[in-house]
Image (tube, rainbow, N blue to C red; front, side):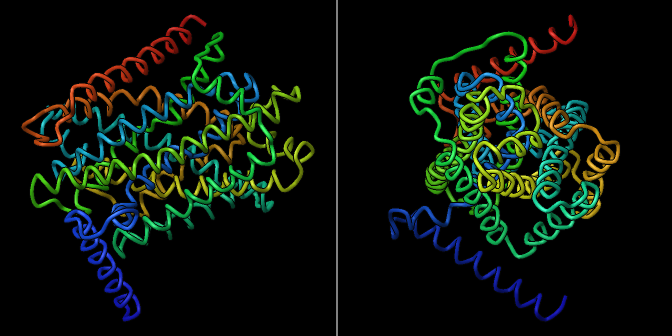
Length: 434
């Protein structure tokens, strides 16, 4: 290690120690207000990036163009699901000092652990496919870079960002949080430019509506794009050793701050998802462009309707989403492998392996947006596995101690799991009979 690199690592360790020290001051009541929350910010923002990845762009824009504001309630429901489940995942890491995959390996039969690992790896690959394609497409449209070269550039950039991990948890947390805020800012601008009907947004955000087969398929895709399996696994890992509680009182304090952070991060992610759909409803559906079904057409259609500025902001948000979510997806892949089967592969090897499907799809000229939507449906099918495991473990008193689920938490999470299972069963039946 070079001297410069060594100094950087030492500075990062000092900053990490400072964050932990500030967190303990907050837990002891020495610091209050927003300053008390700052040391705990990070894990939820990393997890929240999974909820605004390019797969969300594809499903939300297609839903808004096709059905207007009518499917906004699906995003609200999915975000409420995500908020609860991410809170349970974070709590599991705080209570046990282990990630969800590690607990599965410790407490489940080996055959079941292997099955969950394989299914989870497939989900991670589907996730990475969506994220890579989104960033690649954004580079292609924004800078005119050929798709194949854009894939390689995306891979190199995400790998370099992942290298921040060797400098401790804080630099990577700050980097990802900056991406999340940039995406939110982009959609604040898009909201101003698209001038949506806020009365329609308010109404359809709370009043459920489902039409025929196409709308239900898109609803499954929206949920699959919003509530992410790999984010549920990852969040428990992000909190397990970040600020280690020394007693039950500290566990409760850390969980309290963690819940506040999750509410902030998931509210931002929820706003972005709503904005994607209501922008599409306002710009495309309202002008008779309900056929918009891919991101390239959405970009080219935005230019004459709202101007080049709106189209460029759209691509900047897609690029930020693709790069940051690909980083998070790779982190989750490492957590899944390490937890379920107890070993890891070098980061550059995982980066190359997860790039391979995207390179193949780009080389074959497969439609990127349809691939994105299919990947989100796959994620929705896989989603019940981590949810059921999470519910099972977080309600066990001997494992969770003072952070054991309250009865209402278990009931709500079971209800959400049933909704997802019901939608998935409907989708499979429709696929068989069609």
